[in-house]
Length: 193
Image (tube, rainbow, N blue to C red; front, side, top):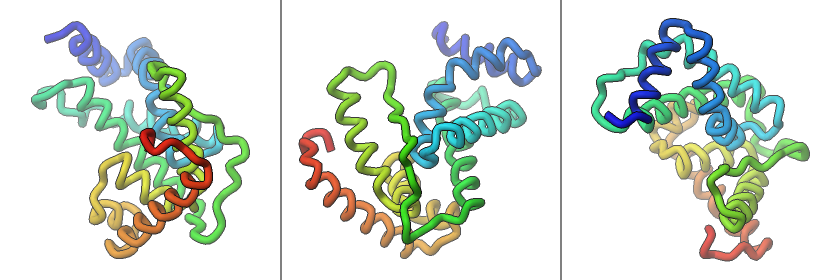
């Protein structure tokens, strides 16, 4: 077992015993990761932070449900499990505010969230693509994120959003079509898309 795996297991065990230091260390280690995911769905800085904080609360409350004995990379499995919590928390929030199919929300205070390990060129391309995605309507953007980025099937998207499978496929198709138009207008190099 690697020291990184041992470290994440120690933090998970500490969190399951309500050890505040373990909770703080896990929070600090996963905050940027969580914000990046939340920003795919919620584009206001403060609201995204609220979703991340709510996700951490759910994580701490349910950490005993994570199976430490599962085969595979414990850290990757744990991040995947936490990612599901974040996505579901964001989708629940979007449901509360009733997804607006016709008018995109005002995203003027959107901050780009880059990965700290990216190069300047990677970050530039990432920001341009995220900027194009954020111009989609909330429904198209949500379906696009769930299918392309999160890897959900159309059946899972339909169940999660309470829409038909056909609507999920249609929204994805329209999202991709709209993205092509946005990207072609911006002249983003195709080798980055």
